[in-house]
Length: 637
Image 1 (cartoon, rainbow, N blue to C red):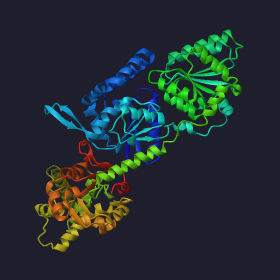
Image 2 (cartoon, rainbow, N blue to C red):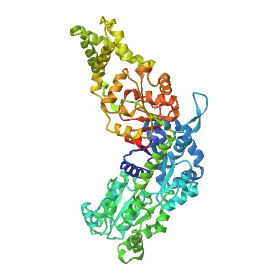
Image 3 (tube, one colour):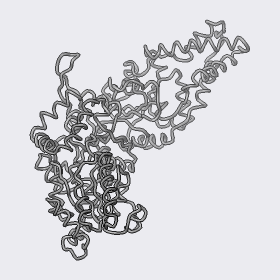
Image 4 (cartoon, helix red, strand yellow):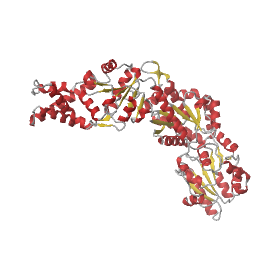
């Protein structure tokens, strides 16, 4: 099972939950990949513009407030433009990736993707000169509310299969925005697993970080290093015996500015009780927060909830327009403080120095023993996997029979780079049985291989099949090898000699027999194989102990046409008591098995276990579902 976790990297608040969700899905065996969406689809200018604009707004709060307000009230017409602008690229990307489900953690991708994937949408098509319907891929779409305790209006959607949110406050906000309560599920906060490690004592962690064992504040300016550091100066001027860790993120100028100030301060006040440590972007933030007595900074949801998880009070020093609800919630719920002035912030630190006797500090530290939510998202991941499996089962609810391809689906015939060698060995065996040897035999082997290459190429374009005995009957007399005296038994022997090298390298996939045994109790099973020899197909099944499971075997050498030719499928339909919609086609070739199923309205399962050059460059051929191992089929049928 494959999942794409889609976000836009406008702040770590969207990337962090994406990483946490992907990591949890990995535990369930899901190939979960996080994707910065507009970058991934090649909308480079738009992606760069969004991110640069976001960074600029962080430095100009009035613009952030204005943009946030406009976005809340007029988001639909603005977001609707993304469908004609990026819809085809989004669909092409998803078609190429073939996820079983998608998870969206950012409001920007949500609007176009839920409409493209769930219902499809009408769009002007340049080639046809009219409006056509695109999308409607019908795979599960899940959302995670990264606002946590609030809701962007776009989260008020009825199209997402399930929306997950970590707090009741966030759930109620989503309901007010228009999201059906039946499609909202409570989940834990997707904390980065590095915060969940077993820490040593705070004193030991401080020692490992080179810190003094005393009252410590972690002051975070976020990944972009945005914020006012006047609190640092104020604490130093008061000569408070506190230790501040200033985390400047990627803002090297801020890092240099603070360090330069502190160097000057230390030179002028060498005996000061105040201590400062300045960091840039750090990947071990959990250690610094754990080592602290309090965390402070911009009211980003991740940094706030990470502090709460480690039971450290948080003090808000800055709240952007989209963070004010977090700051208000934090204060009202008693997990920290939101001082409105610098003097109030300094006073709160002073009270922290005597926190054992301070009622406010005691109240917050007691409140932190009861977090506002769980911090496990195992239930979220399990729900996504379960709902996707159920979604897939429903798509095959009308199936009454199962059709299997052979090579690459139930067994591996690694003929690839050894195609010539295998066929040379086969024709050499035939010639040896007919008494042709030496130089003459070598010449005929080379000539036969050239002829077989031609027929193979022709078969791929015309879809006509050239049965191996027919090839031999035409080739041998044409090159002076008499065949009139050969009886049926000898021809059977010659065919076996030709197929033996290929037969010898064929290996059954580990789970093939168990799967067929399970399916046989529920459905009739049919084998549909492109092969120049029915004998080879039958002998493979015998050797691999699979022959007993199939009611009927259909081979292109008997029919005269290869999959996906309509004559092949017509021969199948005339030989089984089922309509196409009642059968499911399981195969590993998009251009053969899946293309034929699509032409005849059959649901299909694409086995993406073995790489084939035949599958390159044909992403437009879509199976009903893609799996990467045989046991996954049991979850569907």
